[in-house]
Image (cartoon, rainbow, N blue to C red):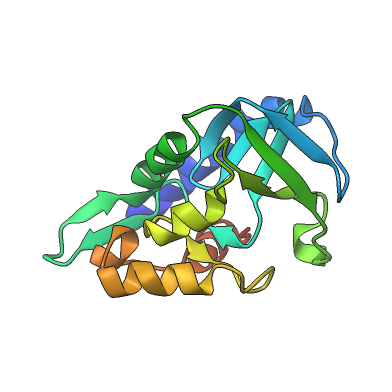
Length: 175
C-alpha cells in the first residue's frame, strides 16, 4: 500500500509540473542564464525562465524515504529542497548549460550553477549531504560527497537509497 501511495504522489507531482515545464524557455549547451532562482525540487531550479537540473548531482526524490541512524523515517527530499533554497537565497545565480549525451535524459536541461559569491551550488548541496554525485554525468562532486559521508551529515546521518535507484524502482525513470 505504501508503494501505491508513493506512486500516486509521484504521478500527481508530475502532472502538476507539466504545465510549468511546457512554458519553460529553451536553452542550449554553452548558454548562460542568470537571475533569481526559484527552487522547484531538491536538485532543480528555474533561472530566467529556464528549468535547470543541477549537473553531476542527484537529490532525493519526492516521496523517497530516508532514515536516521535510530531508524526513524524522515522526508529527505523536503530537507534537501530547503537546503537548496538556503544555498541560493543570497541573490541571483548563474548557470552554464551543459551537454548531456545520454539517450535516457535527452531533452532535459542540466547546468552548472554558481551563487552570487561564485560558489558552486551543486558542490555545496553535496558537501552538506543533501545530494549525491551522479558519476554518469561527472565525477566532479565525488570529493564533496566523501566529505559529507565522513562527517555523517545530511543523507549520511542514517540510511537511504540512491535517488536514481529510487526513481527507477518507483517511476521507471530517474534523473
